[in-house]
Amino acid sequence: MAYIGWDIWHWLAVCQHELLLFAGFFFLLGAVDDLAVDLAWLWLKLTGRARTGRVTRQELQERPLHGPTAVFVPAWQEADVIVETIAHLLGVWPQRHLRLYIGIYRNDAATLDAAMAGARGDPRLRLVIHDRDGPSTKADCLNRLYEAMSDDELRSGFRFKAIVFHDAEDMVDPAGLGLLDWAIEDGADFVQLPVEPLPQPARDWLGSHYCEEFAEAHGKAMVVRGAIGAGLPAAGVGCAVARGALTAMERRTSSALPFASDSLTEDYELGLRIAESGGQCRFLRARGEDDRLIATRAYFPSQLGPVVRQKTRWVHGISLQGWDRTGWSGGLAERWMRARDRRGPLTALVLALGYALILLTVFSALAASIGGAQPIELSPLLIGVLIANLAFFAWRAAWRFAFTARNYGIAEGLFAVLRIPVTNLVAIMAGRRAVSAYWRTFFGEVTAWDKTSHSRHPSQPSHEHSYDHSSKQRAPVPLHDLHRTQVDGDPDAPALPLRRGAGHGEPTALGQLPEEVEA
Image 1: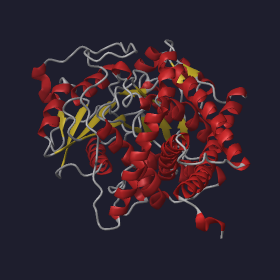
Image 2: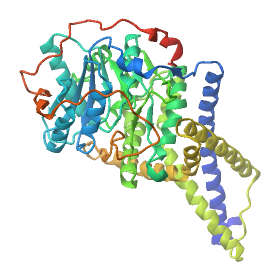
Image 3: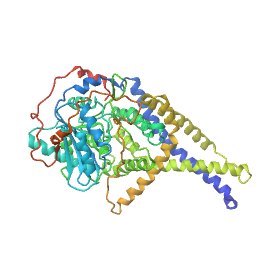
Image 4: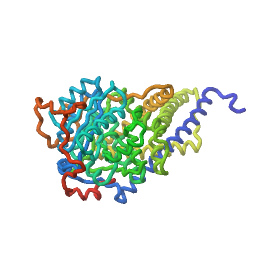
């Protein structure tokens, strides 16, 4: 046979050609998938179905809520940021019918002390001490907050209208609560606002790469999902669920609690499960009079270890565990979106193969230049695949620049393109770790909250970024009033002064919002 007398260089050339064809095909498949989303978004934009609404921040900020609203914030070792999170949230959301629930583990005294300091005596804060050592999982902590809220409803004789979810490092938008409250009152069972990661100092290549990812995901992909009728996954922050929808989730579980305590991505599953049960889900994009999105903002991890751990949790929970937990139900649009959600491990494999081929190509070219090997001969098919992939890469880079520049400026848009190799390397590392972690669960490894640490909050004066988040602040409460903060387990804790089923406030000019804000 012809290949018997081949030398090592010939074998290497053949392997290189076949691997290039393999990787090129899967890159092309992913590019066509992304192109379909791009074209769908363009069609929505041209037909006026992807318009971003315009609202007045102060009007939404000061608008009375239509009913009592709970905010859940699970926390584990968040002493460095929880003070600012609580103080900022209670300061920019002045509605008196708001109650903030902070979940704290019994072996996390530092976070408890910090939360007390951030309360400033505001009676709307409820500190809930978990009855087990941390960390467990975020879902488990949310279940504990849900139990505390249910207890408050039983004791006080009222029922919350909606539950809002946030993380301990979030800086909420002053208009966020008002917009979520409007959507729930308008009939939505689940609502998600955009998430806007903040650029890191000195154009940090790791910490800032979240900017372009969320700019595209929450500026395009989520808009398309909503338009084609696919379920909307929750981001876990900046989202709200109607009380009735959460009760329905509780009734469908054997534990009589809404969240599966062994889930790594309970937030992702939240929106999908509500959609599966027939609930109305919305993704709302609106900008204030200052042209900034009504969005949740935060600093994301900026060091390699925490970045990879966070991405590992997402890939493990969504791509692998999510496959087991949520399956492939729904129509064609739903299955398409779930396939997109679960392509992380395959993407990591193809990316790793692609970068390995780049190194192999450089090595082969060097060998050929000194006469050690013959240059690889590309078949017409492979040439066509490579040209198509190059064109799609240019198209992808242009979209990444456009969406990032819209939110963060031209300079950050250019850096987003330059960061593509960094983003790819992080995806490779996270994909490998996710598959390994998933494999270990078959041998009894218990799922744990492998959270990322947070050391700074956007509202801290020492942390500069390109946004002016100034807003109307409530006057600080003297520290000697800290005893007014409610801690779970206190039978004498005062109840919210609300009447069962009472509505609060008349509709304002925001009654026009359904026509202005995209769903």
